[in-house]
Image (cartoon, rainbow, N blue to C red; front, side, top):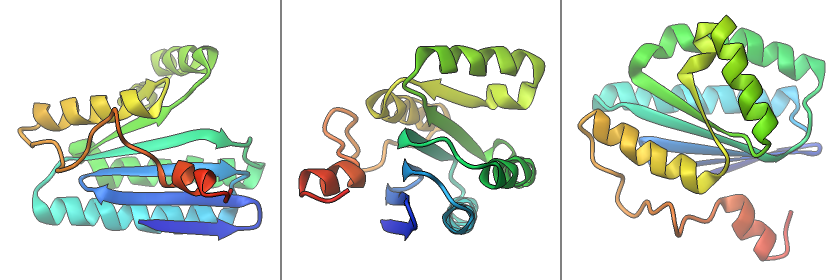
Amino acid sequence: MRRLESGSSIIYLDDRFFPVVISTWVGTANLENCEAFAAWHTEQLERAIAAGLHMVSISDSARAERPPPVVRRFFADWTAKWDEEAGDRVTSIAVITNPLLRGAMTAIGWIRPEVQRVVTVPDVREALARAIEILEEHGQPAPAGLDPDTYVSPAEDERAAGGT
């Protein structure tokens, strides 16, 4: 578990339930944190490959603000490279709380097939439940201790304790 903080950007990187990895985004992402996220994510992929495991990556951006253009460009470039490196060894799940945005992702997927590879869900509980199903589809057990109904993100833990 790591916490990246730079300016108004916080990213919680939760690998406690590897090969399910969860990134929780808070505030306005900046390039420094995004580069650190990308490095961590690549480390997790290498770890999964070495262990012969399918990885499920969950991105929870429910508390994130709209990223600036430099960050959007970074992710456009990084995603293209990531898709090539990860191939079918990773399933990405995006928590998108707005049903209109989830619908837009579906529509974009009709035009850009690579977007269809991202599973969109309305909340973290559903993301975790879907992650367990995906691992089972790949012949892998659910990570020990991972329960979608009791999971508390590090961001929520910190907020409950009076932090961010």
